[in-house]
Length: 148
Image (cartoon, rainbow, N blue to C red; front, side, top):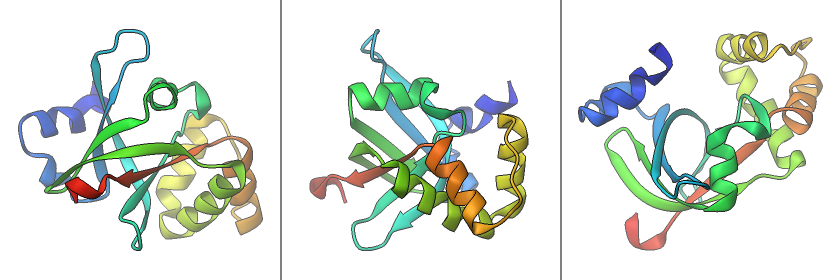
């Protein structure tokens, strides 16, 4: 399946070819307790903390999103960086602001995500905020100090 292709690239140690915009998130299955890997787009970063922001495009029912709520300790590979961190679901207000900041920077990707998710937008900052606030939860992953 094409959606799993980035995970395979990371397995083959070719993840750096994807740049820093696609990361490999390794999280723990909430039922199995086994490691699970998901390739996700980095939607933003916090330069002060080194945290990355990820969007759960399919909402709070996404398996990776549910897993990090159960076990927030994760590992992130982005480009050549590899680090452990703690995942924190962002508040609806934070998610709204993150979506409103992301969409103008990557309009084609944002519109494609909306189409896949069955959502519509008028393209305004307010509408992107609403979508992030109401439909697409974001996660902030802050690096553990000892791994950076």
